Image 1 (tube, rainbow, N blue to C red):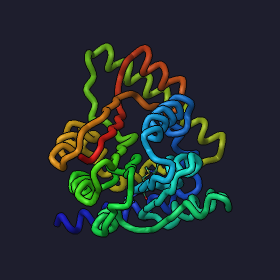
Image 2: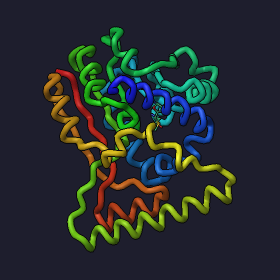
Image 3: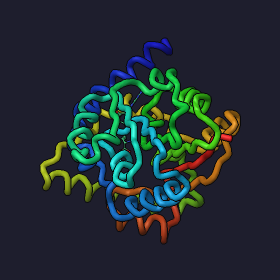
Length: 263
Ligand SMILES: C[S@@+](CC[C@H](N)C(=O)[O-])C[C@H]1O[C@@H](n2cnc3c(N)ncnc32)[C@H](O)[C@@H]1O
């Protein structure tokens, strides 16, 4: 039963991301708006200043290269793995001729990939991928076991199991979310970008459980001899202005990032 469900999650991820294809980031402005862009760059600045110029980065579930391309453009040697050959093809097409010698791409399942040795990497990135996995804790454990001391682990843009302080705050949070989604749908219609609303049920597997609790991830990391360097919780929205309002005025949270290091 478990194996069947796990296979189903993998199959659905292949199917949905084949549909996402080159429109993936256009369909997900919550990753590209000014607010999230600021968060991504701030995190990268912090991580990259501790990496040697010749450091090797591994981006698991790299998709169309949201973080992969940023690391590549900062001069690092980057390996990207993704289950979807379509997403990898989009990324391949975005790598310039001069960067090709530092960009290594592979298609496959993260769990199988981690069974091979990854001691060579100095930073392992999981960006918006853990919630797509059937058993993200097991994958994280496998990832940590294969790493040499000093390797950083970046967990980025995962859906947070939410806790909202008061009912007023919750009502405002829901209201802003409604407005954000309505405007998003309108924008997608105007730009003629088809939405995949009914497709994500199995592929975004952990969303069925309300997201991921970062405390569970921190516990796994500590058990695997890693130290937590930073945990950040905030509110992501389709539009940057709504993300700004949610964070600066309502102070709600629905997303988290964790940075850790292998001892
Ligand atoms: C939400 S996208 C995130 C892509 C990219 N990391 C980003 O931040 O934009 C999730 C990606 O994880 C990939 N994925 C899902 N399950 C996977 C698995 N078991 N092994 C490898 N990649 C997987 C999907 O194909 C998809 O490209």
